Image (tube, rainbow, N blue to C red; front, side, top):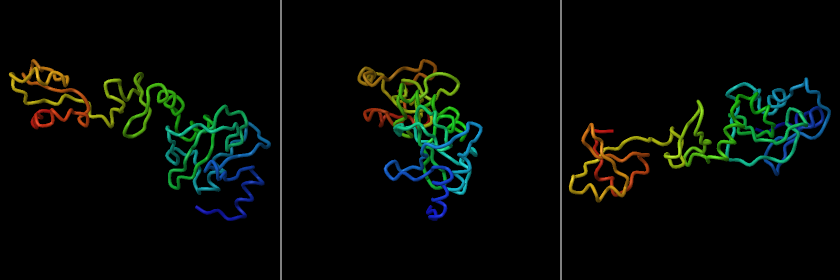
Length: 203
């Protein structure tokens, strides 16, 4: 989205905001700021046509590094760290503090980011892995994937009794109720040696 020179001058003169080519994001210079003012919505609407504070208008990328600097696009000079917040329709990026991230509809971003640093990120969708609490989305048995990407289940197998010891090294187990052997895990990670033994009628 291209902005007119007049609008870019307005953003710079009125809000101390400009596009930083090196960071690939809109940033704000030090300037006067009153904590009662909150200009992120105004600024983002001038640039993108949308108020980015409305839930659903933005997204975040958990795998991007933090940015140096203390001044959020809203003007607050007291941020400890800055993060990259994107306008969903255009992918235009703004460097903002954690409070603005929350106000833009991402209340769990910082907690999730800390979980990701501790537990890792999903190998497929890059979401932070959360092992505890009411937003738990994975556990250590999922081998680096979230529950949405990892179809963690019992996969039943046709293993003749005489061959049971051959396949035990692949962590196959016996289901006493169904009288069947199974392997438990993500379907995508089923060992190749077990592929030909899958039972189609049991999932």
